[in-house]
Image (tube, rainbow, N blue to C red; front, side, top):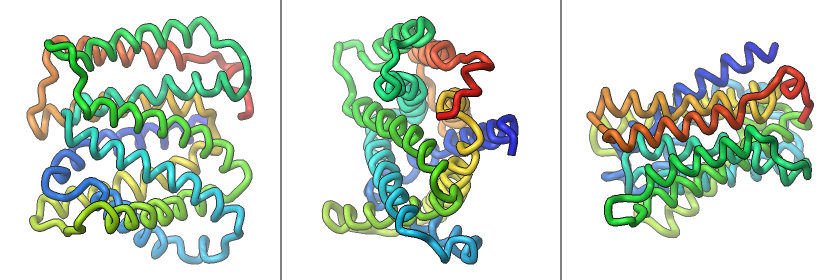
Length: 289
């Protein structure tokens, strides 16, 4: 697989994840958040096991250990995101979570111990301005949902960096599938500890859960590590910056969400910031992380 092909796959993953905010918004008011996470990853894991049983039946301890780590991160990301979507709009949640793509190069600074480039500094400043406009309301308070979305973004950034390293040591397909299994396990434990489990009661809610499971999880989180093996964390982050655009478009079309003039201006600042921070030269893209 070439880097161009890998990036194309990651773009389709970004499209799938953009749709996920609509599915989450539809279900979160009738099904407890952790239960939704358990259902989406549980169904996705079962489907992927049925499809790739022969390729994943033989797995070593190292792959399982790495899968448990990224699975725990995955579970944390979406529990935080579910609570975020529950307390804010799907469009806003999409743009807040998109700060992941600026956190990736920032975290890379601590890993590589190199000072940030001017592009990253400029991007951080622009994103910070956009976040301030998007988060602070007329009464100068920040909605609780925003905090959850930003926590999800931070965990997401860690997940991207960790996945990029793990796929160079273990089979990417096995890692992608088993992380779904571990995410299911952790979410199921959380469901019985902190919630009263319920199943979807209507067709639209089942459709949303299946959309989250098959399109956003089974496809998205299995193809992500496979494609990441052939590209860089920065390229991954750049392509994932398309996710909030898709989420805003879907939210406007399907649930009539309107962020308002200030909201859209703030969203464009965030998008501009992440694009500036993640713009890289050809030489930088050839670095092997």
